[in-house]
Length: 300
Ligand SMILES: [Zn+2]
Image (cartoon, rainbow, N blue to C red):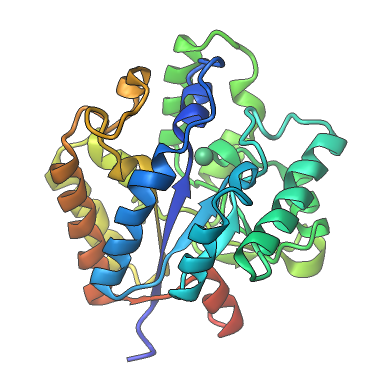
């Protein structure tokens, strides 16, 4: 049934130290726990469901973990860039640093995985017109950073109240993004015809159909959003994080990550919840990678 609308599963491989940096904790040492504990569980889950996925990798760790990327690519998964260092706020970097984050991460991940990287997702979805233009200039064929939901504005307001670095969190065009097209589309404002794959949202209220949201809302509300997205007939781009397969107590994770959504939930329950969502989507949709959607001409 190739005429079914497609869905893409993408997992951001944010390391524990980079998550902590997002909370203003700058002194955490580089941590490999997601590579040792979460990524094997992720690949196991994809294999069990018989689906491909897209792994957004922080290229700082491209070479050290190259065996993982080679194995994942050989199993049919796509490796894409989640920047070089996951520095935040991303869109306020000057041109030179931005170029390094984009070009260097693409080069390193292409080399490490053995497959040319064509996709990018910005740390904290923080892109502007300037960033999108540079993503295209650096040779990417798609971006997957736009999160077209007003909920992001609310969550940034909450983060702003908690943050020590006030003033930087609103660097991105949150209001513009909240009402951006919600289906995959070609960005006419950017040369080279960069394709944008937004994170999925529900049709009318634009609630996130995004895994982290499931930790904040009652299960019935999350399930309703998922059903609405599946019924919409739009391509479904479902995003989650490696931390969704990480156990705070048993994986040797820095305890300061306890503030992160889902880290109070035992691994078995988190694993079952993620498996349930992915299996529900896979029953109704053909699961492809972003690269496949572009190569098959069905992306936008
Ligand atoms: Zn990230």
